[in-house]
Image 1: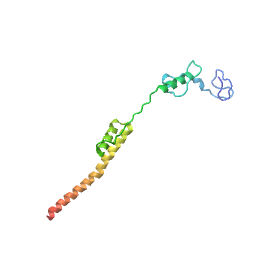
Image 2: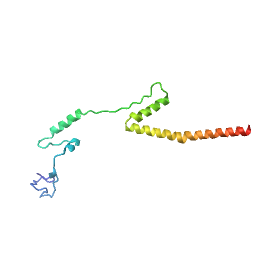
Image 3: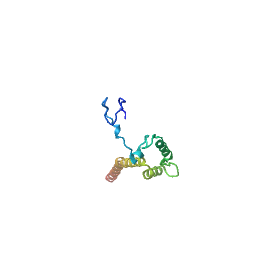
Image 4: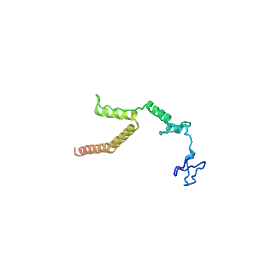
Length: 142
């Protein structure tokens, strides 16, 4: 084996006698089955002189792999009302959508509930108070 730094012959030693470089390449081992499965580079098979067979096998596996895409369609057409279409697309996104669509549907629902609680409910209380005040004033003056 040759030294990677100076190119001199190492012999059986892992340390170069000329430049002092320590060769760590001596710890080469064959990859495990799991490492081979997830490794995307080019490897040299044990006992073979080139990595071409493994490279071609990898390309063949990639050609035969089926890529699938999941799509969720939201239909805003049809005979239902605008509110009905919004609610149905919200429910469809929540039930059938991917993770991002589900998170978006939940956030929209939380925002809608917050809007109802912090905006619509106080307006209803103000209108109720005005109605009660008008009834009291009509009893007082009438």
